Amino acid sequence: MPDAVGLELLAQELREADPASVVDTLYFRDKAQIIVNSAMIVAVLEQLRAKGFGLLASVHGVDYYPEEPRLGVHYEMLDMDTVDRLTVKLRVPLDSPNVPSVTPTWPTANHQEREVYDMFGVIFTGHPDMRRILMPEDYEGHPQRRDFPIGGEPILFTIDEAEGTAYTQ
Image 1: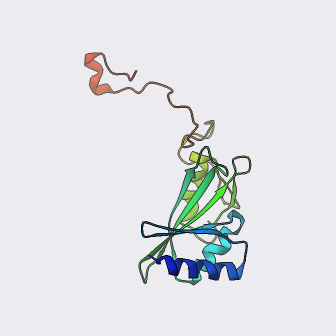
Image 2: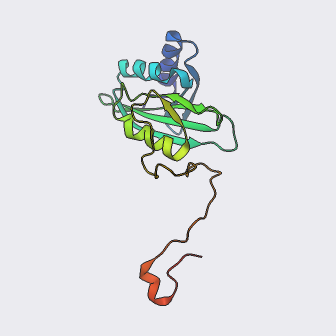
Image 3: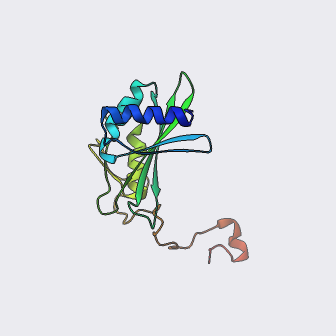
């Protein structure tokens, strides 16, 4: 992982390429994180690829409720030569949850962006197949948002059926 100084030097290089790209940096518990402008995510990841971070390991959605901008996307990058890890974060408001898709340049992001869309409602513009991947197409809402109503249909546990306690209360 880049240390705190290495993280700041990396952020400085990204800012030199485009001053609006990096919003902030965070080095916490030996974990390097760069917070970027959502509109610049494709360019930032390409610059990081040129710096050696050639593997996009994962894409995650986050809900920062009640803070605004509320929704976030985290990209976990890996430099395979030095085994350095870097988290690239961005945040978007609930009323306009649009982020450029990185799928055209990072094919591994395809299903992961669809999952973030399905669970959190972040729309990845330019994605080749932006539709639900885990929930039914006609499902309303995004179940991983923190204000999503808990409850719903009782769950059937057939192992307890003989005792008459097959359903959750």
